[in-house]
Image (cartoon, rainbow, N blue to C red; front, side, top):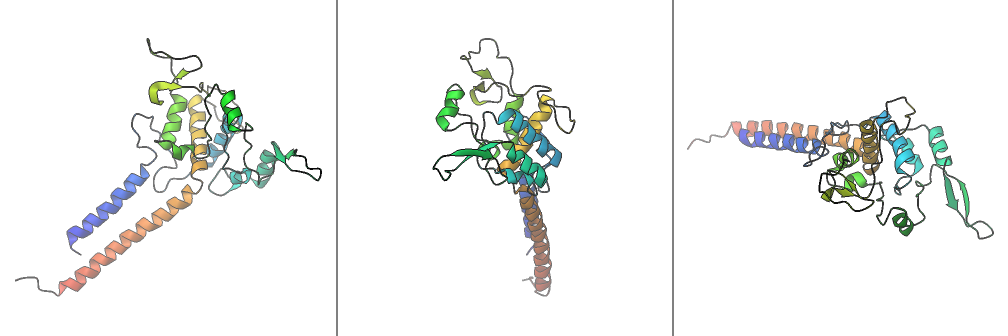
Length: 260
């Protein structure tokens, strides 16, 4: 392998690493946040994940479901990592429909860690009717389903403003500078001191938006940290392999006379 070819291979590896690391921050016209989980070695902040769950529970869960999450996921490694007792208490705070019983009837019981997050509505039509004709999207994989990922969610939460002069909004529609068409049916869900964080953190709008976005990103990619660890090992392996190949080829061709 010639020196130039080796350099090109190494540059390719580094460029690939760089672009993977920017995956959460490269989206046009959105607010850019220095997310802890971005980059090849990025990790979720446990405190932020737990606060983010609190924001979801106290603010978002009244409208938005997270049907692909179970309460036990809140205790898994790489996630919020609530203790087993905390997970049991969280699950038990919800009533879950179960059955039928021996008499053929459905009944309600306290939630268990194995239960999926309780849906705020019995069905999609009920959700649409309760939200003025707009379906509130499930938040389980929202961070992956929207272009811009974490930056998109954060920008929408922080993008509510008074409409510009002459801009027409229908009743029940709000102006958001980061939404397509600048129109959104969801009113601004966050405001300063809307909730009281259990860890004493100041619950500003920006802090809550950042925390719940972190939580939603983890929900969409619960194995992100493990994937980052694997990616780091792969990059190191490729660099070592490319180096060994380069020096091996150099040794092999060192005794060959290339002069005509």
